[in-house]
Amino acid sequence: MKINKEILMNKISQHELKNIKIANDLVAQDKFYRPLYHVAPPNGLLNDPNGLIYKDGYHHVHYQWSPIQPYHGMKHWYHLKTKDFVNYLDLGVSIIPDHEGEITGAFSGSAFETPKGTKIYYTGNIEDGKGNMIREVQISADLIGDQIVNKRIAVEHDSTLFTPHARDPKIFKYEDQIYMIFGVQCQDDKMGGLALYKTTDYETFTFDRILKPSLKNEDYGYMWECPNLDSLEEKLLFMISSEGWFNFKDDYELNNSRNVVYTAIKNLDLENYKLGETSIMKTMDYGHDFYAPQTYWYNDKLLMIGWLGAVDVQYPTDKYSWHSMLTIPRELSWNNDTLVQKPFNEFKKNILIKTENQKSKSLKIDKAVHLEFELENDLKIELLNSKGENIKINFTDKEIILDRSQQTANPTWNFETIRKACRKFKHQTVEIYVDSSSIEIFADNYQTIFTSRFFVENFDTIVFNKSTEAKVSNLKTINYLK
Image 1 (cartoon, rainbow, N blue to C red):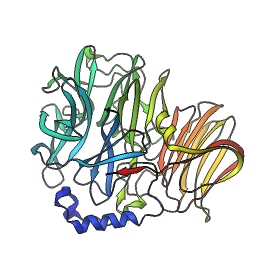
Image 2: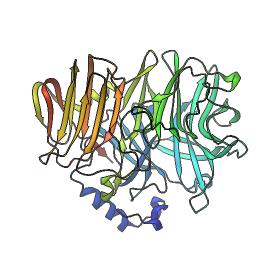
Image 3: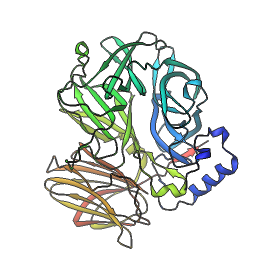
Image 4: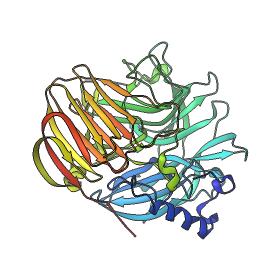
């Protein structure tokens, strides 16, 4: 779909019904790539998951949404809620950017349950009309009866401390203090940092400090987007979506246009205005299409959902007027200081059907499949169509490799490489979730993850280089209920 700049920055209420119909008709024409069990937008561009919270028996999932066109335009929020990740109540647009603090878009944010009800905190974006950002403010609102209401500015932009880049707020409790944290680009050095604002009532916020890296000669990029800071199993999990931190000399680390990285922290070094990390941040997901993950608590489990997409990329689905989806929910834990990401057990229990143990060198599939197997030695897996167009997964004795160079159609961006990770375990459990145009590979006992889009029209076969025993499951198609 060609970009129409005249309507790119329209609010949903400003779009003509005929343009909405054109977009929806294009989406309906996608017979190859539309997902069966991943959340995708009704049309337009989906990106960051926002406002994740478990409340009143439902998982509430919002996401950033630019209507109609598959490009980054006027950002709204879209709201779904579900009990089982199969049946979703489609609650429609939850934030239309109509407040003075969000004149050019409602950017990312989070939800938090306070003694006075559920609060929504997000970033309002303000540009000059020519695409130049002027400032970003942090907005608070209330989630009442599935509606986001009562918008007000919680934190004004401080241009003495930050460049116009200051966004993605989240509430974090630490040592009897309540903070709003958000990522910033610092004014003094033009590098990233974590802003902390104190509050006692979840309404008024006072600047406290900016945290910078503890390790010398490390900066983690010029902007720290979508920070998550969680107490997890007696450690702190700190993750950011980093802008401007690359390593083109390393086949394994920091190879995307923007990179999601994490580290384990014992204690924040507040006294010295440092994070307190003792090991360098490292890649969270080795695939092509993973960004802006957000965490939330479900009882005593820390869950995470990410954007199954990437920045500065155009996909083959753009011609069908839709762009990107959300990952499946993952449950987080530690193995020493390595993050473990398992498919959320209740999601898995609800979505998998017709599970069979099979041992063979090939499987016939129809758009979606789930595989789970124990791996001892090397293994090559190929997912392909009748033309031989394919993606390949290769487990060698030293590496795990994902190669999508032989697919039907290719994304357009500057970071298209074969993706690799060091193999951690000889014997390991592997789970693979395949959907119409996405793959999520959980390897190394859930410590090495690849999340990628792929575009192989009418793929129908999985081939192993040797007879392999696996649990093979179909998956339910999710329902959107009005």
